Amino acid sequence: MTALLGPSVVQPRLPGGGPPFALPVHPGPHLVIGLSAAALIAGAAGLGLALLASGRGFTVRPRTLLIGGIVATAALALVPPFGSADHLNYAAYGRMLVLGHNPYTTGAINLPGDPIADTVEAPWREEVSVYGPLASLEQAFASWIGGDSVRLTIFVLAVLNAAAFILAGWLLYRYARDPAGRLRAVLLWTANPLLLYHLVAGLHVDTLGIALCVAALVALRRVAAARPRSGLAPGVLLGLAVAVKATVGLALAGLVWVWRGRRRVVAWIGGGFVVTAGVAYAAGGPHVLDQTRSAARMVSLAVPWHLVAPHLDGALGHALSRQIISVATIVLTLALAVLLLRALPYVPDDLDGSGTAFRISAALNIAWLFGSSYVLPWYDGVAWALLAPLPRSRLDGVLLARTLVVSLAYLPARVVPLPADLNWLLTVGRAQIAPWLMLAILLALVIVARRGKAPAALPSA
Image 1 (cartoon, rainbow, N blue to C red):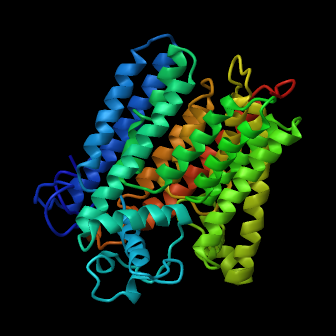
Image 2 (image 1 turned 60 degrees about the vertical axis):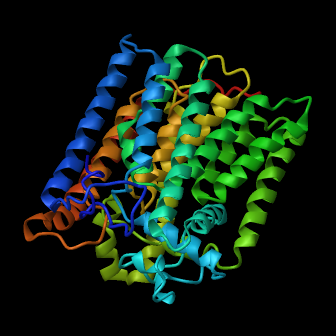
Image 3 (image 1 turned 90 degrees about the horizontal axis):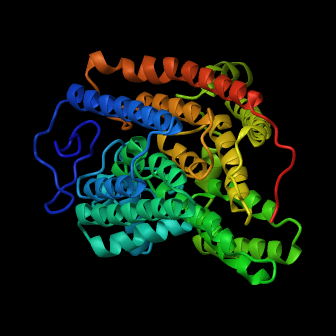
């Protein structure tokens, strides 16, 4: 509904006609923010109740729910993206590549008068790309098709994004061995209202990286000790995932751990990963990671680190303060990873070890999400994907609470003027209430993880 109403504080205007389609209603900020908040709360409540009911034996046909999620995904690809303005940046970076510019050294402000670059909103007009080389290639492909039309460029990106979301859902569905597992996979991914809101309606490039990461872990099922070269496919797929977003590379630990006793298999997995990711980033040029390194020292508003960052900045100076926070995030992430490796349940009958790889990858990525100083709502997508093959646990509820809180905190996820009576969403909701709620959820994660039963041993292939 929000997308169909047309441009608003949650949806940037797309000039021109044709797909994606919307009505020229131009709704007010109170209405669209209210509708978005209601959708997020209702979606989270529905997902929570569905997970609770499925845990008590209630079931529906997983295939029916899968088809429903696919239809919803396709429908959302036909309406303009909303929930952020990142897709305008994607279109501009793709345009730069097509025109012969380097998106890792060029900002939209450097292309004055360009019909695509001029749509990029402040304060991102001077920012260079933070996305991986494969993401830039996808954006360039969309720009090549879209030409001077930002609307068509965005539509191509939306179709590609929806295809990646559906592919990830299909892989997770087929990976599950029984109806209960398939129902869980659909609930946590394809029919997850929070992911449909952020990854599909929001058109975030994270979707492609997650899909490739899931493909790499699923491909582990085809790896055999007698054929060491079979380890090449998972390594290459994960290398491609890292070429979209670097943080999904944490899944490499899961791939390698499962085959740690088979050096030749590990060599093929690691070689495929290193060569693929290395070639991609080498093609991106020497500045491909500049913005990523800068982002690593940032502190977003809706995280617990925001409660201490201003005080450390004032006492120690911004540079030293952020160095301390960067080290502290690593320490916290490692500590959380140890707890989660003890608490996350195993996949039953994990004969090929792929379930263990999902489990280790989930532990590391969830630990990073909770420990990082800079996160946005759509970053949670990777955690939902990696939890989908695992049996249900109390960590499901913790992640659900986290995603809902950070989603509400970033309404609207654009830097746009708001009416005076809505400014509290940023100054109070995002900057004050959300960090404390996220701290409470972090403590809940620690409590739940500590109460988890430590497994006797890790199975291996």
